[in-house]
Image 1 (cartoon, rainbow, N blue to C red):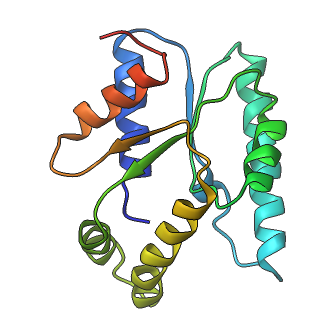
Image 2 (tube, helix red, strand yellow):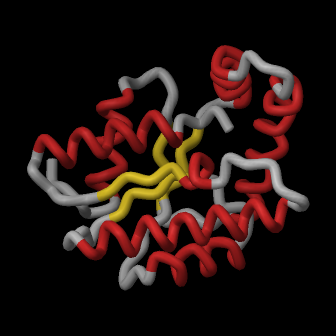
Length: 161
């Protein structure tokens, strides 16, 4: 939380659009915004929504997907890969300092769960450090979102400089 996944996702999508590269950009957290009986129900529905979105995009010929999600373990990453039926996936981890992530969450989250989200940022960062699921890391601090998104796309080999 606070690393900039959603912001960089949108900018990467804009950069690809400027190059006329067909793609879809999906924020997985947005597909799971619900309060259901259990967290596992939320994740199940989120991934079913993702599968439906992928099927819809595939029906119009989209073969490239940008996804934003903090994957906490190998099992979730492999499950996600299966849902999107990806032949080739690249995982980029966006990083920023703990104070920067906390500031971003503080500015963004203004509602009743604000303190919980701020606390979650540090905990999630520790989980991601342990999981090491990324193919590469991109620093998202003290740089423009365009530079960060461009670096991500270059390192993923979607575009050349």
